[in-house]
Length: 448
Image 1 (cartoon, one colour):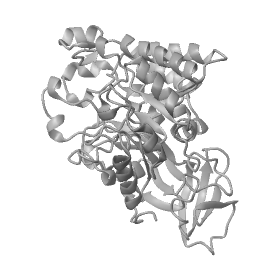
Image 2 (cartoon, helix red, strand yellow; image 1 turned 180 degrees about the vertical axis):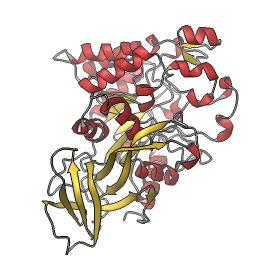
Image 3 (cartoon, helix red, strand yellow; image 1 turned 45 degrees about the vertical axis):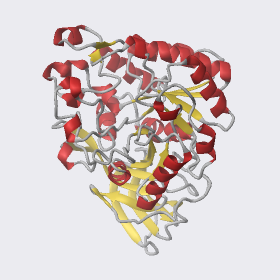
Image 4 (spheres, helix red, strand yellow; image 1 turned 30 degrees about the vertical axis):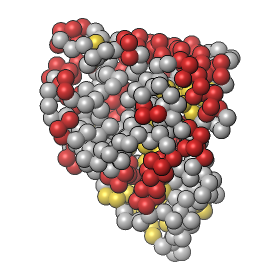
C-alpha cells in the first residue's frame, strides 16, 4: 500500500456531524462523512445517515498529527505499547503519530519498522508511522539501514536518533544527503554531548542552588546552528526536535530571514510552552525531561516563536516510563513526560486563551504543518468536500483535572498531575471512522 491509498478501504458508513464550527469560525453547519471522505457541508436532514453526532457548535479541526511519540514497543512494553499509545493518541485528538526509533531492538532496520507499522494497522485507532534511526543502534558511529527502511512496506520518511544527538557533523551531512534522494527528513535531538556530561537540569541559578549538574542552552543552540548550515549545504531536509531555549528560537528567526535558508522545520513541546525549572524545587522526577525545563524567559520566547511561525509546530515528545523509572531519586530517574492526551489543553491554555493563536493557528501547528513535514498526504487536509475525513471535534471551554491514573497510557508520568486545564477532545474521526468519543475509544478493529 502506498501513502496515497486509502488506509482503511473506506468505512462504508455515513456519519452526520450536526452543528460543527470548522476552525471555530462562523455559524454552526452540518458536515456529512461518506465512506471515509467529507461528502457535504451545509444543512442536512440526516435521514440517510447511519449515525448522527450532535456537536452543539463544537470546534472542528483537521485530525492532529504528532511528529514525536515514544510508543516503546518493541522492548519497553512495561511503559507503553502501540495499543496503549494509540488509545492515548485517539483520545487526545490524533489521527496520526510518528513512533520514535529508540526501542529495543532499535528501529534501525526494515524488520523493526515493519513490525511497528503492522501493529499500528492491526489496532487501527491512528495511523502509526515508524521513525527510523539515523545511526545503527543509535550509537552515532555509522548510518543505519536508511535506504532499506525507506523502501520497505513501512515507507519510512523521517529518521531520528532522538534521545541521542547525531553529533558527528560528517555523519549528519551524509544522513541529510542520503535522505534528500527520496524526500526524507532528518529529525535532530540537538544536544552537544560534550557540553552536557551528567546533566540533570537547565544550567542556571536553580540548578546551582539545587546541586544539579547543568544542561546549558548553548548545547542545543550550537547544534541547531551547525545543522541548519549542513541542511543548506546538502539540500537536505532538517527537522529540529523539541526546541527549548530562547536562543534557539532567535537563531531560527534569523535563519528564516535569509533567502537561502533551505528546508528546516522545528517543533516545540507542550511542556516547554508551560512549565519552568522552578518546579524542580520539589526534586520530583515527573519534571525531569530532556531537553530540560528552562526559564520563564524561554517559555515566553517559545510561545512567541510558535505564534510567529518561527517554530513550525507542536509535537508532544510523549515519553512514558514504568513506575520504577520515575518513582525514585532524581538522579536515577529517566527523563520524559506523557503528552498525547494533554497537548490540546496545554495549547489552549498557553496559546489560544492569551490570543497568540486562533483555531486556524491550532490547526496549523497541530495538524497541517506536522503532516507536511512527515509527508502524510491524507493528514492535515482542509475541511472541505472531497477531503479525507481525518477530523477532531473540540470543546474549547470545558475545564478538566489531569490525573495520570486516568490517562490511557500504561505509564502515569504526567507533569500536569492535578492541574486544571481548558479544552477537551469530544471525538476523533480517522478515515471516516469514529475512533474516540466522550473519553472512550470506539472498537473499530484493524485496518486492512
